[in-house]
Image 1 (cartoon, rainbow, N blue to C red):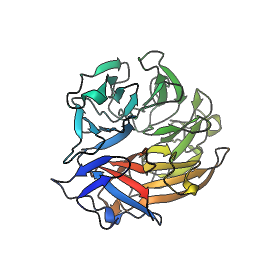
Image 2: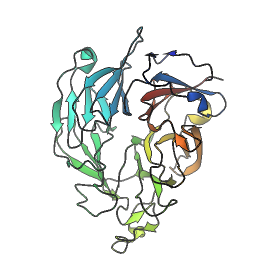
Image 3: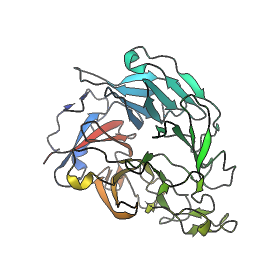
Image 4: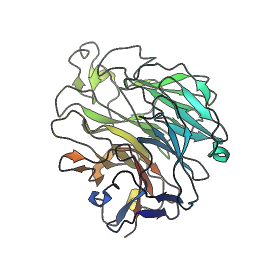
Length: 369
């Protein structure tokens, strides 16, 4: 970890990063990990790196928020390889998902598709609109997307506000649709803003993070880790936060007992975003079953900053949380952040990939005692 060179090959996963940096190389020697784990920079040339998706061929696709671009980090490695730009001109294309040779990309009000993308990385196709019926508001308008085990594409729609009551079939929910954009339906309500979800490898239930509202103080409400056990469940927004905090404005309308409580409280203002169940074999045995990794993007308005780290949540066979702990931290240095984790992704070799939209980087964490 401390002997990081300026050129790093990702053995096994097959990504390559060459560094002729305009900016300083991310100071990853500050990252603290459990004994035996190491972190490497795969690339720091993905501006605003956000959601990640892997193709069966090993190409890592990365969405972004600021410049309207989508990137592809190719595999196998090649000398002086750089991430390719495969889409431009989109509005906050944060989310990416891969299925049947096509890359699906979220925009604020639409989902688009890049067909046969693996064979066209150097000459990307023009995006094809799949569905353009989503709200146009940019407040919480960026969308993490992923395909579920049922073959549907899951698309969240955040609340267009800090706190407000809007049509629950239109806002503050998680929706799903067929790959062709049809059969759009709501699967979860009362979700203020989720920017990360995944399915339990055994039960196939949907788990997701949710960001709590602002301006109730430094220490409340907590961000949430939630579990959907039945389509149509309501998770409280805007009436109840973190399972037991009635909203000052809307809480009298519906009690907290009317909603599904979170599986875990993650801390106030930590900005819990991307999450994945660990499904690899590279980490030690205690990490290989019912382990969830969550990227905390970090607070923006808390008097003392919180988040800026990767946390590990361990659940038992019934879905109850038995342990929470910090897995990786150090992006916050002397109360000032130099990086902000966004998404996590389990690579084919079992390592854990992490995107960082502040350092424009993709990291790889692996076990190498």
